[in-house]
Length: 205
Image (tube, rainbow, N blue to C red; front, side):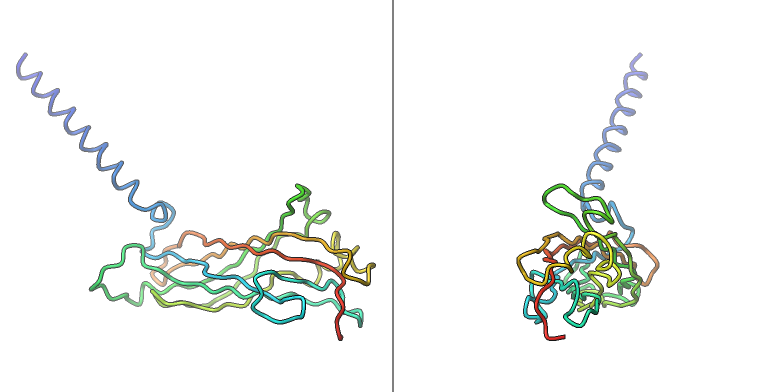
């Protein structure tokens, strides 16, 4: 009987240690739960063109059609940084800890709850890229935030019939950036967003 009691205590002790280890390692870092990499990608800023067409604005203004009748892509700029998840003062990043940004997803939403693609908001899309960031370093990356063909489809094409700034449509643009390290491990996706105003704005083109 005494031997059985000792065995039961030993088994319960092992189970307790196992549960503790799982709980500790599982709560270390939420990014580690989504990635096998020792790095994470961080979106620092996302900017686009102002109403005057100047870059670096934290609110984007998209002209749905120029005065000459042309429709063009809108470009945004993301500033990204590659951080070590568990940096050590004496640790020197290796070649395998460089980050390769390989895809950007763009989608749209409206605050009024009307979010059907191709009717209320433009269709979401993805674009392939191939840019490298060294561990601990940063990158400035330009990408398409509005495709030109979206301006020939609902709901943006309807705005081209209003030749003034009184008819505008505000949306939020959601950016998801995918990457991997040079060792082959995927990083957790990085997210960012920016507001955009669509309209038939005055221009010199």
